[in-house]
Amino acid sequence: DAGVIQSPRHEVTEMGQEVTLRCKPISGHDYLFWYRQTMMRGLELLIYFNNNVPIDDSGMPEDRFSAKMPNASFSTLKIQPSEPRDSAVYFCASSRDRNTGELFFGEGSRLTVL
Amino acid sequence: SQQGEEDPQALSIQEGENATMNCSYKTSINNLQWYRQNSGRGLVHLILIRSNEREKHSGRLRVTLDTSKKSSSLLITASRAADTASYFCATTGNQFYFGTGTSLTVIP
Image (cartoon, rainbow over all chains, first blue to last red; front, side):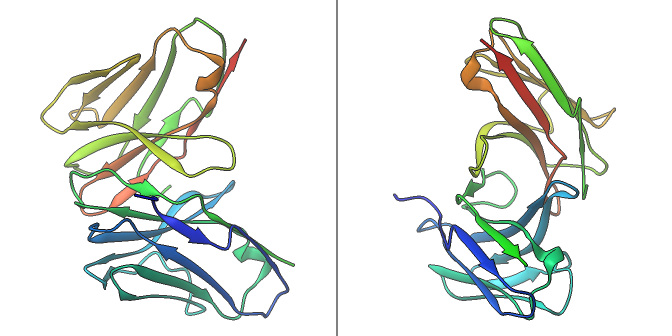
């Protein structure tokens, strides 16, 4: 298996622009997580899905952030409009089991908002 | 952080020495996991310890768990330069939360 695949790996955009980050989880994993990592706040859980359904989005910082999972093999995290404080590394991870399974992480998408 | 704290935040040791990192968490858990992150990369799972276990070994890794103190420790024995990375604990209860991480530097 190719592992969790994220794109783009790097994104530089200007404030106010829309940003879309993409994730392909490992086949057969029913859980998908989006995390944000910054030096100041560490790893923050933004949202997670089970069988394509959003279960908990309490970590999504604002209405500017939205996430979708239209099918079992694809998820997007969208920021519209983007702001400089959104600059971070965004990780997608998938798991077979929420409670006992390990998380498999993608390599992350490094976002810089100017 | 949303759940736990690692201690120390940074650790620098000589190759061959042992490295110990601690993790404290806030709520009840199902299990606790340790992950490693090399610079610029995603996190990689190292080891999982269940809430009813007290100690677990995997190669040069030894993990302990004290649920009464809500704490865990990760020991890396005979460290190598390639162990240089950040190490995170993650707790699973209602959520999957990560601690703040310990940055380990192993000097050759």
